[in-house]
Image (cartoon, rainbow, N blue to C red; front, side, top):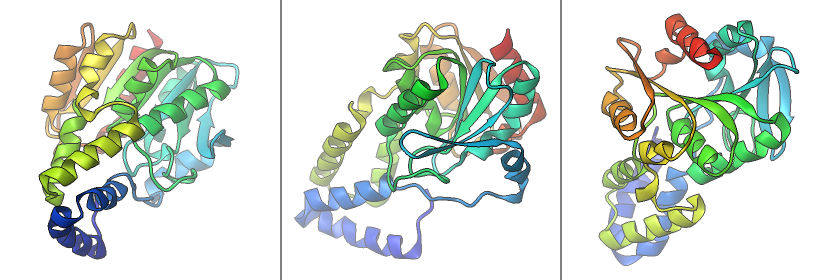
Length: 275
């Protein structure tokens, strides 16, 4: 999460205010936690954008599609502060395998509507998108989008396969790291977790990707770089160990984002989905 100078000043005051205004400070901290940055599309993704068919799905969700409309659909889901074209390198290998590929800008991201979002909201938007796109051959998700996609399938989204790229294993750990950074009082943290639980539709402690996935009858490929500094490789191992039958593809030297554009990775993912 990128923090502006102004936000850093707010955070500094929250550490003190959380002792005298615990509930209100928790809500301020939650607003920041649930507000992604709309990062402009870089030149490296312009080709993906120009070659795509632009669509608008229900709920004001921007989408980009490649491939024939009558082919099985693969949905590409980006991570926090990302955008659909960030996943564009997966499109061509999948189109060559006979799929229609649809990448989305999640709620409050890219060209989609909204100011804030969360894991539950992300899962809901995927369920709504399926009403337009139909049953999915697969979902390829990155980072924050991994847990959201697994939760969406858990809540009823139909997908034959899942590809989980560089995703965290425990949502509670992500929240705790943020709260540790903010430095809220204990009572304020309790208010934070209660409010977040209402929005997501489940406690953060239950958002365990491997445990939820193990209850699904869906084959999954876990892709993670051993040197990822944003989401440690340990998360992939934890998901793999908890989710029976998953495949684990480890890479080296690609980090958290270059992994999305690596030709070997995109080809391996296309082969996994098509077999």
